[in-house]
Image (cartoon, rainbow, N blue to C red):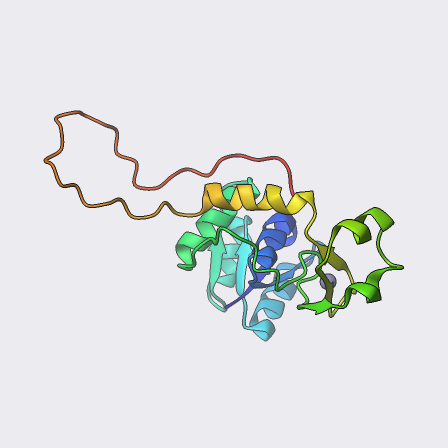
Length: 184
Ligand SMILES: [Zn+2]
């Protein structure tokens, strides 16, 4: 499944790419018809916050109108609607910047392209086959992992062996997304 994120959803596009989803981004404001045509030619689901665009696009492409302006809440909603799980780890398959595929490269090949302290500390490097961006597992990766762990669904609870105690507890079928300001 492919996605085309509307101009207001740049952070969501980055998150989807980090999760390995093929995601295109309308990086400048375009006419509604142009965006719809692009989604049609890509065969992509259109993600937007624009109600008018969503209504217009609905006749031509699959569209999800997102209500939240928080990128993590948008990610949770997209995952829920299109039934994919949010993994606890980053697949490291796509470039967050452009969506290109990442390929592992020899460490020696990036020596002149990264900071010496990064080169000294890291063993595994990947390069985007489209834009050339180089990725390594820096401190931001653990931040992303922590965020994903919070978003990932809880494991199924063990079946109860004893009858439940008579305690009224609020039912919470799905966990709300935490609001986080930082982005990778
Ligand atoms: Zn790239």
